[in-house]
Image 1 (cartoon, rainbow, N blue to C red):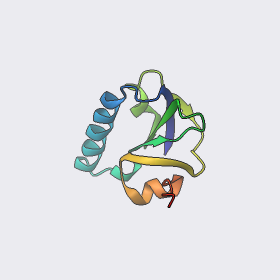
Image 2 (spheres, rainbow, N blue to C red):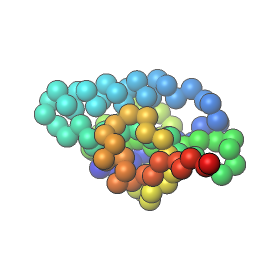
Image 3 (cartoon, helix red, strand yellow):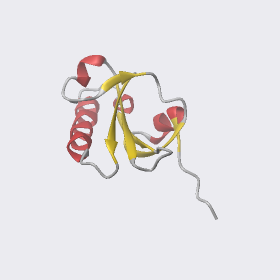
Image 4 (spheres, rainbow, N blue to C red):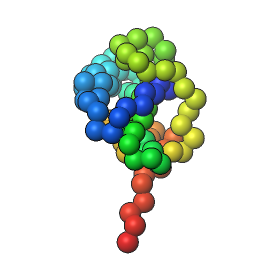
Length: 101
C-alpha cells in the first residue's frame, strides 16, 4: 500500500477527491482486487486551521488523478476520521479521535 497526502485549509473542498476514491474502491472490488487497500482519511492538526487528507492506494499508478498530493510515509497512527474505506485497514494506520467527557 502506498500513501499520498495533501494539506488543505480547514473546510476546503476535497469532496471531488472523495468521490474519486469511492469509485476506485468500487472498481477494485468489482475486479476482484483488494478493495481494502483503497481508503481516505482526514487527519487532525494542532493549529485547527488546516487538515490533511491521506489516501491509501494499492499501487502508485492509482495516484495520478490526485493533483497536488504527494507520496508520503505511512501515517503512524495519527488521529483521523475515516472518510472512505475499510475500518480494519484504517485502524492499522490511524486512531479515531477520543471523545472528551
